[in-house]
Amino acid sequence: MISLCGIVLVLRRVSVISLCGIVRSVCQRFARDGASVVVADISEDSANETLGILSHDLQGQEHAALCVDVSSRQSVEQLITLIQLQYFHPPCVCVSSAGITLDEFLLKLEEEAFDRVLRVNLKGSFLLTQAVSRALVASGSSKGVIINVGSIVGKVGNLGQANYAASKAGVEGLTKSAAKELGRFGIRCNTVLPGFIATPMTAKVPKRVLDKFEGMVPLGRLGEPADVADVCSFLASDESRYITGASIEVTGGLFMG
Image 1 (spheres, rainbow, N blue to C red):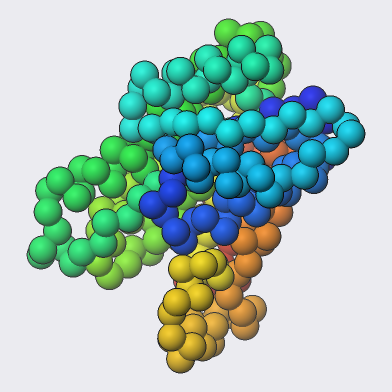
Image 2: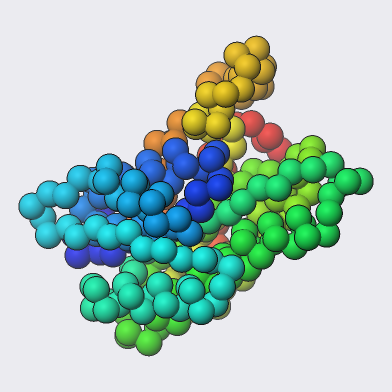
């Protein structure tokens, strides 16, 4: 369980419909765990919408919604400053799932589309990891947790997603390197790699296509956002105190090997 005084920073980007259900489930899980959750999004309306679904109990939780552009160092640093002003401490857990997709087959993929996806997905993860880590070290905190949400696509690739796959492979490498450097400060860094998760986006996919994907999953079903949220909760808890630099696949066994 997360400490009741813990501050969890969860980042999302409204343009990633497929992650919407995952991130909101993560926020809800951490709120149930007793954490104060800060939802950060490039869209103020989207952040407030997520904030509205979180339960406020009598255990001292104080949730918040803030805006951030993860591809901008200035915006990221301002976000961490605002959190410290409000809670008098940097976030002890940061879950970074901010990202975008601009899919196109490799032969038609524009350079700007490639660069933009890497700016948000990979550079954004770098800026957040660095800013949160610096704040934790400066505060004298003896521990912290950074969870970067990658994708199984970063390991196996996918048609029409050369830019997305490259960015998520980079997120995994970044996180493993950060784990080696930040372990001496008590900061653990891990990556979660979701597979095919049932979200508002998959609800629009024809049933015959969904049935085909389900048939490929050894566990016989698509993942649920809660499946990812549970793993994030585990990685944020003391139950995973000796786990860092790991990549946990949440795929139901899809793409094993």
